[in-house]
Structures are given as structure tokens and as C-alpha cells.
Image 1 (cartoon, rainbow, N blue to C red):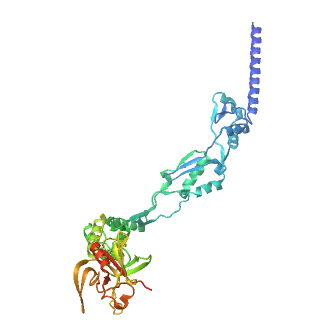
Image 2 (image 1 turned 120 degrees about the horizontal axis):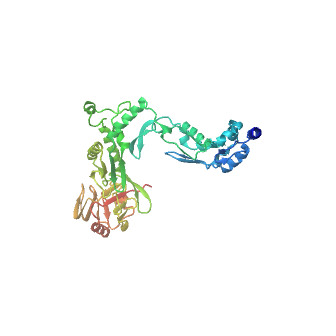
Image 3 (image 1 turned 45 degrees about the vertical axis):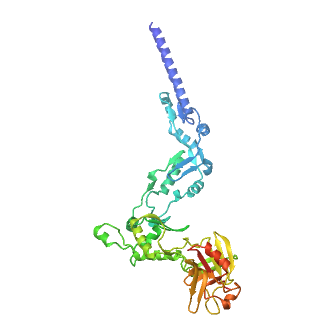
Length: 474
């Protein structure tokens, strides 16, 4: 019995020794084996790596890895950087080698209890010059504007230019873009943390204060109508009505300084009046020089006469002062002391009388159509009674009138007054009209017209009709 137990003990002992020896060999063999390959139970990025070398796993990971590029999202732009645009490359070999070197091959038995699951990022490479070229094409990533606060006008509105707010930090943005590409990030949002505000300087604060004061006084918008023409009075012009001192600074209103109410700055009535005078000078046609399209296809400059528009300057000055102070928006037709049939630069219209005193011809147009074409005799040039040129109008007409002058009394059947004592009338004492008669045997200044033509003209013409009278320079 004892011998049997001794034999059994020896057998078990031998088995144990052999098992330990075998296990030792297995342990040493696998430990030696795992010197250049990944240990038992190792998974990297989902790939089973046990027994494989970094080179082998690098091939597998490269096949699985995909990077579609970077989308950069900002408030202003969206930028897309494709991998091929920057010669993007990636490789896991270095990362795998580092991880392999960090493992202890002789500790492989611990993996029997706990497997190793690791995530590794590849080593990324790209052409920095190509990435820089892309970023350089966007102002956002090259922002170097100095902080500026100034005032100006946009579409006639007084505005404040202020770039001190929400200023992009281009350097931080570029650094974030580099990091995103190195980390193979798909989307990078450049949010408010990449923007900042610059502190105001004392000078900029002064500009803002002046803007706020000026802006409180501006705002009127008046469209002056001159027929089909118009002129707009907006902040661009109104700002010039603010009274300024010799240094060009706005003059503070005494009332505002004392009470803190009302207009902050003083208005310049002189500047407003000057603007109205200039407006009237541009649009008044009474006594002006007109480029008249004469019969025969030529243009003649006609100066003077009693026809035309004349703005009521005093009334308009009062209107402007009130409109500016009350900040009204208005489409305004100016007041006139005299009006033509039409407003605007072309105030004659399509119905008018034309007297060419060089050719001694009278033409009457109705709605652009010639209805009377007749020879006439105008003032006697030899006796310095020449008919004055100018743009006039029919302000009176009468049948059977006696014309009385210093040395004459003449009865006429048709009298059409156009400028003082100058008129268009019949001349029954004449047998001939036109030609050179006016040079030596002309009228006292009136336009002598054949009976048939003047009677027709008298019946057709209305009070207010323009009469354009001119000489053609040789």
C-alpha cells in the first residue's frame, strides 16, 4: 500500500514537473514570439493583431482607414479642404511600433484575463505650402485690419463704421485647422471663441459720441420734384447744415447745454439758405439759356425772355428749415413765384410758337405736329428796332386793337401779346413777308404776320403757350 502511494506520488510529481516544464517552455516560447509581434488578445482599431507585426497591421489599418477632408464652418464662410488639395498622407506604422515597444512580451499571460483594445491614430502628413495657399485665399484667415471707428454715408444715410467688434483671430483659426487635419477631423466649427472685440481708444469714443449726436439730428428725406426730374435731400446734404467752428467741429447748442433737451448741435440757416438758392439756380428756367431744337434740325441757344419757372426761394427756405428739424420724409413740389406749363429742364413742351428771326419764319406746333408755317417780318434792324430774342409766352390776346407808339397808331385785327409791347399781329399794309424786308423796312419790334396765318393762329393758340424767338448766328 505504501509502495503504491509512493509510486503514485512519484508519478504525480513527475507529471507536475513535466507540466511546469512544458508550461515554462510555452511561456518562454510565446514570450520570445511576441518580441516582434503583438501580444495575445490585442486588438487595434477593431483589427485582431495577435502574432502580427506592425508592418502587417499597418497594411490592414491603411486599407480600412478613410479621410474625406475637412469642412470648416464659420459665420461668414464655409471652407472645404479636400485631401488631394494638400497631398494628404497617413500611415500607422510609427504609432504601431511605439505601441509594440510599450508592451512587455513576457506579460502575455495577463491578456488571458483581460484583452487589450486600443485605438491608434495614424501619423498624418500634408503639403503645408498648399494648405497655406488655400488659407491665404480667404480674408478671414488673414485678418489684419487695424481697429477703425469712423463715420460716412451709405445711400445718403449717415452711418457709423466700426470694425472693433467680432474681430477674427486668424492665428488661432489657422492653428485649429492644422490640429483638425492632424487629428483627421471631418468638421471644424470656428465659433465665437475665435473672435474678440478691440477696446475703444479715446479718439474712437469721441467719434462715436459725435455720431450719436449727429444721428439724432439727421433723418429727413425729401425728394424735390421737377416734372420728371427729381433731386433728393438726404443725410449727405443735411449733415452740411450743421454749424461748425473754425476747426470743423460741430457747435453745441446753448439750449442743449443748459437743459439737455432739443437739438444737440446748432443748425446753420445760412447753409440751408445757400442750398435752396443753389437748387433754384439749377432748376429755375426763367431768363435762362435753353438749347432749343429748331425747325430745320439744328440746335440754337436761346437766352432771356419772360417764360419759365421761378422758384419761391423764401417759401422754400422756410419749408426746408422746418422739414430738416422735424425729420420729415416727403415728396415735395417746390413753391413758385412763376410757373411754366411744365417743370424740369424741358419746360416748353410739344405745343409752342417758334420764330426764326434770321430766316423770317414763324412755325406753330401742336403736340409736336407743325400746323402753321408762314413768313413774317420782325423788327427793323436798320433802325435798331430789332425784335428781342428770348423764350416768351402768350399772356394776352385781343381782336381789333389799336397799337399806339411814340410816332404811330396802327389798327390790327389780331393781337397776340408775348413780351411787353412785343406781339404777333396782322399787317394789312404789307403785301410781302419774309426775306430781307426786316433789315431795312421791318416793324417797330412786333412780328408782322400774314392775315390768313395770324387769324388761324389766333383761333388756335391758348394763353400760356410758349413762344421761342431767336436769331441764328452766322
